[in-house]
Amino acid sequence: MDYKTPPPETVQELAKLARCAFSLETRPDGSEYWTANRCAPDWIGELCHTAHGDMFPDDYRYAFIVEALDALEESEDPDEARDGYEYEHRNYQLALWLASHGHRFSYCDDWAQEYGSLGDGTAGLLQGGHLAERLEVLDLVRGSLEEQLQVMATA
Image 1 (cartoon, rainbow, N blue to C red):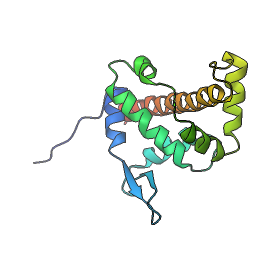
Image 2 (cartoon, helix red, strand yellow):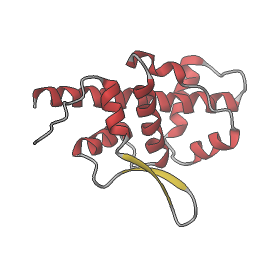
Image 3 (tube, rainbow, N blue to C red):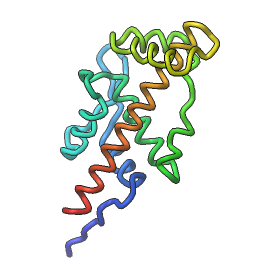
Image 4 (cartoon, one colour):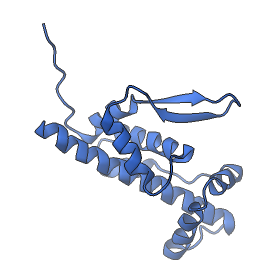
C-alpha cells in the first residue's frame, strides 16, 4: 500500500516540518551552529536564502531562522509569534552579534531612529537592534512559509 501524507495546511504545520530540516552541529573548535540538513527539500534552501536577505550565510541568521520556526510552530496564530520575543540582556552576546557583521550597526541605528534608546544607552540600542533583526527574520520566514503553502496547495 502507498501511504500519502497530506500537505501541511497552516503556517504552524509547515514551520514544524521545516524545523525538522535543521540541526545543531559542532565545529572542530567546539563552537555550535545551526545548518539545514543535506537532505532538506529545495524549498528549505529558498527559505534560508530569503531569510538571509542581502547577507551572506551567517550563523546568527541561521539561529534566528530556527528561533522563528519554533515561534511559528508554537503559536496558535502566526500573528502572535512575535509576542514571545524578548530583548537579549547579556551584553557580551550583544557585542558578539554586533561584531559579526558590519550591517548590524544599521539595525541599531534604525531602532534608535524609530524608537529611541531603551534607556540603557548603548546597551539599549544594541538590545533594540538585535531584537529588530530577529523580528525581521521572523517576518521573512513567515512570508516564505506562506508562499510555500500556496505552492504546495496548487501542486
